[in-house]
Image 1 (spheres, helix red, strand yellow):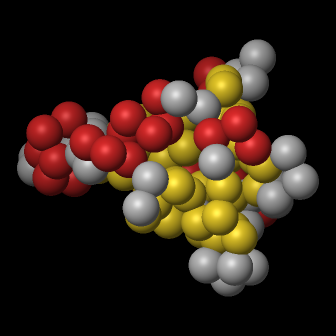
Image 2: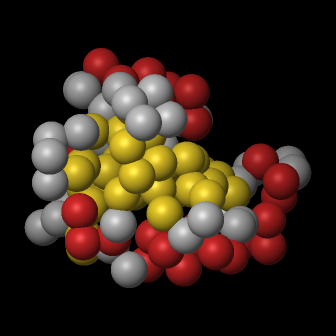
Length: 104
C-alpha cells in the first residue's frame, strides 16, 4: 500500500485526487457487504482489496475525524469508502473493512 506518497490537507482534496486517479465509484456498506449502487454490484470481502488509507483528524471537532479507503475489486472496479474515525465510526463497517486484503 502506498498511501505514504500522498499527503492531503483534507477529505475533499483526497477525494478529488482519488477520483482523478480512477477511484470513481462510491461504495456503500449495508447488510454486511459493500455495494456499488450506481452499478448494482454487491461485493464480498474476497473480491476486494484496500489500496490506500487516508486518515484525517478534525482540528477542532472530533466528529470531523474520518478515514478514506481506496478500494479495488477483482473485476477492476475502483472506488472509495468514507467512514468516521474513532468513537463515531460504524463498528460493522470497520469490522468488514478489517477483513479485506491490503495491497502491498
